[in-house]
Image (tube, rainbow, N blue to C red; front, side, top):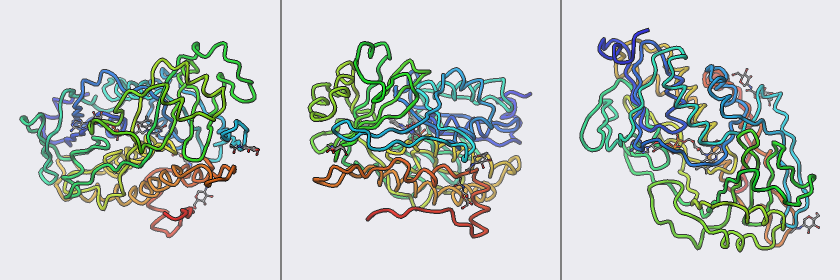
Length: 430
Ligand SMILES: Cc1cc2nc3c(=O)[nH]c(=O)nc-3n(C[C@H](O)[C@H](O)[C@H](O)COP(=O)(O)OP(=O)(O)OC[C@H]3O[C@@H](n4cnc5c(N)ncnc54)[C@H](O)[C@@H]3O)c2cc1C
Ligand SMILES: *[C@@H]1O[C@H](CO)[C@@H](O)[C@H](O)[C@H]1NC(C)=O
Ligand SMILES: *[C@@H]1O[C@H](CO)[C@@H](O)[C@H](O)[C@H]1NC(C)=O
Ligand SMILES: *[C@@H]1O[C@H](CO)[C@@H](O)[C@H](O)[C@H]1NC(C)=O
């Protein structure tokens, strides 16, 4: 098999530049691997360490990764299959249980440590054991501008790379977004902040939580829901860690940096104060956290376009969404699968028009669905109860059928062309 640079010298393959080595960029790099493609990922960081948090892949994203032959890489992550959502109200009473029987969707909801998933994707992208040329990842390569028609990108204000296809996977604060959309589209604060914690499971020993409330060893997602604040927690990394995300209104928080998602170090006393009146067992878990991060949640409105010339946006650059449905990574895998499907027949040395047409098919297949899932994620961020009411109205299963009933971009587009409407759910007042 020729190496990436030999193909490059031949100039008759397809050259692809992917901007951003996050989950979306790496998943796409893997999906597009081929003996005749030279794929370069440009990542601004040194990629030493992804932020620790748990992340889920919804059933059909799990299916997509299996179809890419990633099992040997993902197996090392000690993935856990989530079996249920259990929801408690603010006084600690179990108010809803949704068993996750995803047999009808053909795969499971799988929990990963975000860092492990990222490492596994990086190893798979650069591996010589998978079909196609290994991908080249260039770190410390910050893209400062992009000409979407020419397919050129400029790194660190100097070197320019050109390619047949440019894929903007540079996250929520994307620089490629403006080049594609033609106007600035900034990430919007949503009025919610998230504290996040990751505890070694040993640090929870000795806690006297009844097993019918929370069994740390079980792969179950536990939620405790108040009016305008809620907690989502569960195990990860084969049960070695316990991850917690606590959502609170962020009216009193002032973000200090626009650079990333994880902006500040949070304080445990402030967290405990925000959740005063919640069950004691939950607060005892918080007290044991070694540290706590604080993150202001932002998303973007659906974009009017993802494609311009030879360039397409994917992942959070295209459709950053709230984490309230845990769909961000899954949607990135769906984007990657769509690119794989619609670029499959692209000839070597493609013209700008051939590339543009293929990318527009990706947009057509993905835009409506991703935009709707952005809206559903906002809907799931609404208060968990009405003011003055005890009744928890949040239902984690509400959008599950829509989110999970997906079998690839080509099938989706074919169903749309045949006028088969996949059931949509109406949103209350959005
Ligand atoms: C705390 C947290 C919890 C989450 N939980 C879940 C979950 O449970 N389930 C789920 O599906 N999703 C979850 N998500 C969302 C999910 O991580 C993202 O939606 C998903 O990873 C796709 O991100 P991305 O690759 O598009 O962007 P990112 O992960 O942000 O990656 C973008 C990459 O581009 C790089 N970059 C940025 N600008 C440039 C530039 N100019 N030049 C070069 N490189 C650049 C960045 O350094 C970064 O590596 C969570 C996110 C967070 C922050
Ligand atoms: C929790 O649910 C129980 C039983 O339905 C109810 O009595 C209690 O008031 C609820 N607590 C809150 C804070 O909503
Ligand atoms: C999930 O994906 C698989 C393989 O891509 C497909 O066979 C199955 O029908 C999909 N399930 C749903 C509900 O879309
Ligand atoms: C998925 O959507 C199709 C098309 O609307 C429908 O026929 C099918 O029953 C759905 N499958 C599930 C598991 O909901």
